[in-house]
Length: 213
Image (cartoon, rainbow, N blue to C red):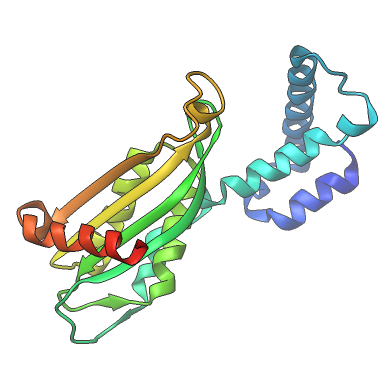
C-alpha cells in the first residue's frame, strides 16, 4: 500500500491507530493488502491488473467506515434529554441502516422502527437515528442489533416501555446460497410494559402499518 494511502487512513481514522507504532501499523496494513490480493487470485483474477491495483486500499478504507460503530458508545447520543411532559407513545419509524453480517461479511440493510412511552425523559428525534447507526456500523446479526437498540433506550431514558422492530434484507440469503431475493427478516424486542400489554403492542404495529398505506 502506498505511503500516501496510509496517510489518508491515519488522518481519517486516527483513533484506530493510536495504540500501535507506525511500524506495527504498516505491517498490519501490508498483511491485509497481501491477503486481499490472495483473495483476488483465489477468485480467478489478477491483483496486479490496473483495475485491481488499489483495491486492497479501497477495501480497507471501506471496512473501516463500515465498522465505525465500534469506536463509540451509541447510547451516549440519548443522554441529551428533555424534561417534557408526555405520557403517550413516541414512534420513530423507517430509520434506514446498513450493516455487515458477521457470518459472511455480507451486507444486510433495512429500517428500524422505535417506540417508547416516556416516564420522565425524552430525547431528540435525530438521536434515535444516531443510536441505530452506531450499533449497525459493526459486524452484526439482526437479532443482536434489535436488542442493543432497545436495551440502550431502556437504560438511558428509563421509559415505561420500549419496543423496537427491525426489518432487513440479507445479501447472504438474497444473492448467494438459497437466493431468495424477496425475503425480509423481521425481529423485535419488547421491554417494560410492552412485554405484558398486547394492546400497546397492537397500537405500535397499527401505526407502522397505517403510516405506510
